[in-house]
Length: 128
Image 1 (cartoon, one colour):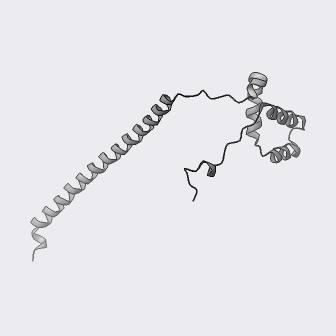
Image 2 (cartoon, rainbow, N blue to C red):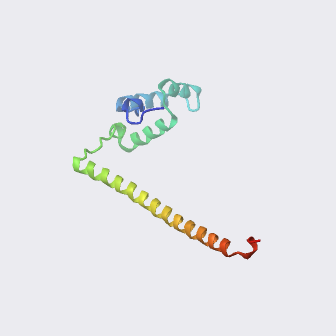
Image 3 (tube, rainbow, N blue to C red):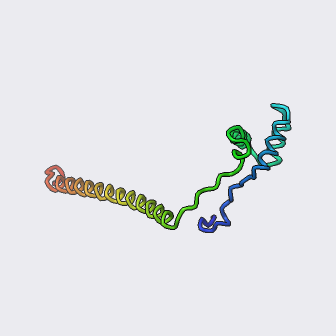
């Protein structure tokens, strides 16, 4: 079993530099379309055709800037805490809803069992 809290146990997503992406795209595009050499290149580099398609789209959208990874904006500690509290609130609201449903079902089962018990007590057929 993998310990979820250990960040070293989780595989890290690979990231590629703009230079690497450009070099791979140039090499891939230089190979004949539909050739097995393209597949060999992807296997050698551990890539998928989806990488090539995504990188081409980014390249066509903005040349070199499109290949460079976009930096995520830094969030303030207040924003991080707010997001954490929102997730906790959603989790607790869902838990409350499940508890309400369970109580409602328990009440209905109790009423049904009470009805069955009363009808069994007043049923003259069951008494000899």
